[in-house]
Length: 223
Image (tube, rainbow, N blue to C red; front, side):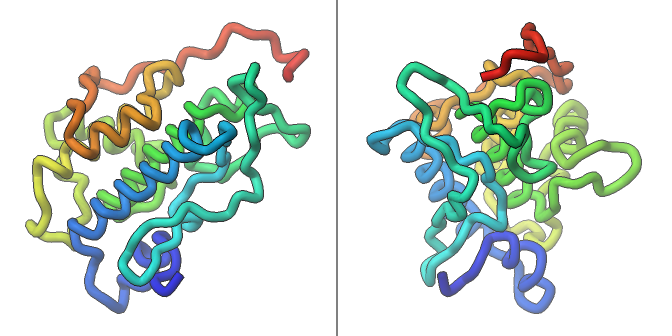
């Protein structure tokens, strides 16, 4: 992939070059959404990637996004909606959905959570780890400014004013919907594609991040 990984462009190469333009960022977002939808709905088997993150998104010479590194990916049996690995929670910290730490299970909803974090990285130009002592994560910081009615304040400063405000707001709200702490409230991959293409409106969100609801299940007998 001539343009390397999204992670490198966002956080390494841009120290020497100009920032990725808004148009390219939106193109990458749409491409990753299409890849996610393919895995979840269009491939002949349902696949959970389990490690969606900026460093696993590769870009060709035209900045078309390719989702790579399927080392943790698993096929879901037709009668199951989740995958439980013998090694417990798989993935990369910052991208792992909160329910996975209790259940040890990967689902399509947990893939969507990681995709939401990637959206925030692309728009904000920041990594998912805490940037200060006040907030635990990038997700928490964006939720906070959304509640204050200042969500566009999180847009990557390197873009200046060279971005489409309406699109940026749509993507940020979609990112928060995808990274919703309650798995059942997250949009499905097809809905994400439809939202980005303008066929469906972005979901309505509460002004403040809801508390995580722990699943009602025993800690033993996972499978």
